[in-house]
Image (cartoon, rainbow, N blue to C red):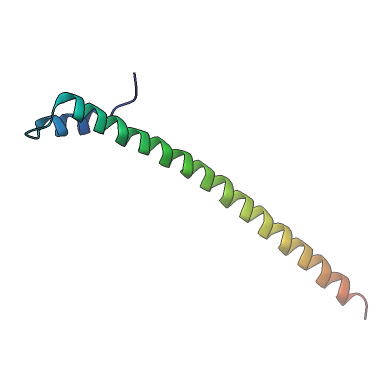
Length: 73
């Protein structure tokens, strides 16, 4: 059975002119979008971590180069 948001389903069922099947289908579709957004959110966390690691590496390389250049004189 597909995941369904019960409060959304109940709200759609209380609307006039909406069949039970239409309400169920709409609630399941909304739940599907919610799971897709959760997956995007986890991917975004990984991208933030990668950007932070890259920034840290760049700063470390820059500090090393500056230290190396200051010792040349």
